Image: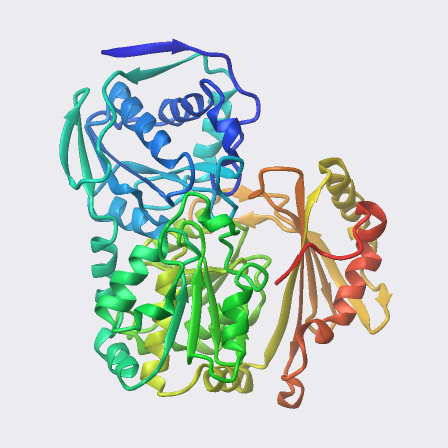
Length: 542
């Protein structure tokens, strides 16, 4: 039986850069989740009888929403749903399954690196048939539909057993509960030289990985332990938990401090890594050295040819605008295209589909390639391991060789979380008003060269995305970027990005915040962060 339920619109269902994210109790409100899912389906065409992929990161409320999705997919005319066993699918694995099985699209249930639990965060994101996040034209249509929706359709059948693989029929829908790991693990083995990595590990090279009680635990156990021989005792927090063990599943130096401290110790493993809630971000730390994500993107691009999947070279590199220009220098030396896009992985999709880039990345710890249409945490880990095996060097040696070739780009991001929305918007508005008068302004040792509000002109479909962040460039190559984040669930997060290029190898060992001190001071002087927000320091520094 299909039931039509009347509802009133919810005015707060505007998708951000990665779908709709709210606190769990918001999604639990009667009709709230259903209204958003129905708005997604109402904004799509041509899916009758087609396949939908569904899965999530295992956070609290994941299973309940999957059952709702199954019933609503049946009521709205999908023919088949592929759902990960236990409701689990990492975001990159979901992208791969959409592509491999020719699905119409997929629903990924995650709030990524945000905390989970009964009072934590939840999220719903729609991915299109290429496996990537829905482009703006679709998310705009979804939001428009949420503002006028008056009912949703749902089929009435019992819950499906998500803990056993197999095929079920319910409400005219074929439901296949699949192994969430196998297809993805096989893909990784096709991209990288597993024999070389396995031999390196067998020789005594120690790898540790922190899954942060999030989705990548099962993937790490299959790939790192079973296929590559990593010591299972060094794969940490590998059991996905609904509340991520009470921790914040964000692979940065604040929330992965234990891993960082381990890697800085005398008896540290040779290589350490972590991934986030839904498995699309990564943290890379060598013995005694942290690799910031902007540098990691540049180093992976410079060495990708050492992995079988990329041995013929790169067609191009893409980075989000706030990401440092370290990768630009690699693209220049390789003689390939370099693309600067707004924040949000969906902006890479057109470039990847058109063959205009091979590797892409964001400063927020996301890197990936044309193997899927999402950023991919374990992919980055495996490419790093492949590079280390091929070069027979330590992480520190690879890093220092790279800096000697390209110079070092000192880079940091300062996050001011939970600012009152009006305060944050007021700061950005006042700063934007200043942009036209900043050129030529001197701030201690720095002189402003130019300033603008970043707009992106997509070279594939000619679409324009405006107001993507405020940029201030200084003579000599330093840069400041200011953005309000679209990934939080309460208040506003001001992100300030700082970089400075240093060509002199004798100065490459400076501490990052010390090297960036003139840029940090310029950010405060220009934006008046303390005065306008009442914050004396960032919440998180990465």
